Image (cartoon, rainbow, N blue to C red):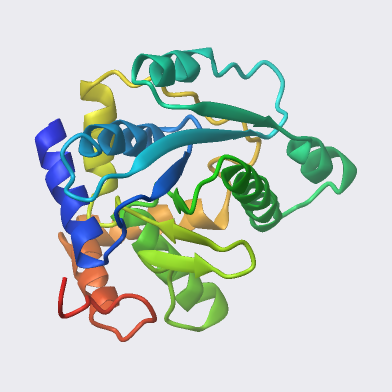
Length: 242
């Protein structure tokens, strides 16, 4: 996927759901994976021509795994004049050594988001951009359906009243395969996930299930996404004045 194609998808999502307003300061959460680096690269390009001017910064929550370096990401941010912070934590030790969690994802996500939100506020941000793409949205819906018995997924825009922060998801209209293509084409400095649970989670089970369903029924993930948009889920109805 080329930059102009990616920007077109991102801008449509941003415009459809009113994700950006003039004067916003947006923190992009950077894990080091393909999704967050693709989002950062695209948002950096977008800020130079988007009609609503906004500022951008980047934050990485270091989970505390050994031998993980963020030098290349720091260099990328310096090159693009994006303020960048790495937040050191002991999350990996707490989850895998102290608590020995057998299902670590939920607690890890909660702790990461807490650290990210706190630093975003310290940096003067009023919004945080998460790199959830279309596949993530459909997978979350399927996880909720199968494991919780409800039709639910996260919304394109979510207001966190306790932190007075708004979460936006500009990659909502972008497929994971397109993110992979973009990250490879532009040689983004991807860091492989060091998490020992990577590839062995409920999300991975659902990802594999959807891949099989899509192979047998091409386009099924796109139809599921259409169902989400039309399913009266909170936050998914496109405003009439978009």
